[in-house]
Length: 168
Image (tube, rainbow, N blue to C red):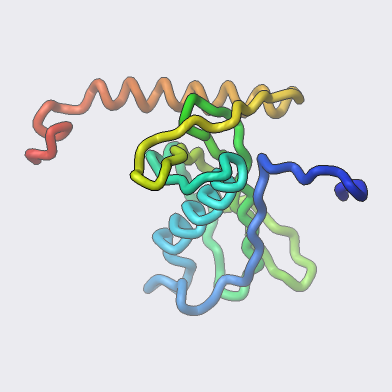
């Protein structure tokens, strides 16, 4: 689906595409999970910065799961979408797909939710535009983001005091 001429671009979504390079390989010959997490963070940042018009920082990455490996030479596609907003935060769903660039199908390798916060020059949180989900899919993703937030908040409550205070 292409954007009609003179139509405003959808500022709630960002896509990165590139080839996985040998510099990103782990000892097992696959793309290193840390490299993938860096790409996810960069894509989420770009999406959040475009949406908010501000510098943004990562607050959390939740529900990440590595489903299949990414091989050197694979086409990698990261799609980041704003799925919910708070006063200063943006919940960004990032989906990663990879496959043979010579016509092979790109298969999902992972997905996750990243929470980004827009900040000013002093590093203080600032308000972001409100995201309003319209389609059924957008509403399901917004609910999913809020459900994950609630689950993560509950997990934080389970954390032992010494861990929360950084003593362990």
